[in-house]
Image (cartoon, rainbow, N blue to C red):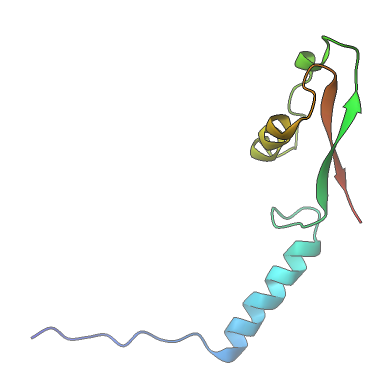
Length: 84
């Protein structure tokens, strides 16, 4: 006969604390959950865009997505803006 261990449900206070921390992280520029990031595109000389790489401190996944979304990769480079 297997003994079932009752799973402890998170208390309402624990759940509320997690939600508050998530909201805090959404407003914290140092958090990966920060919501006020957007890539814009700067114009560069034709043929020079390929020289630009992901800057230090940037999320390489977000940089790659910005590169994929680039409307004109031959003359535009992604530039990250943080803030609101």
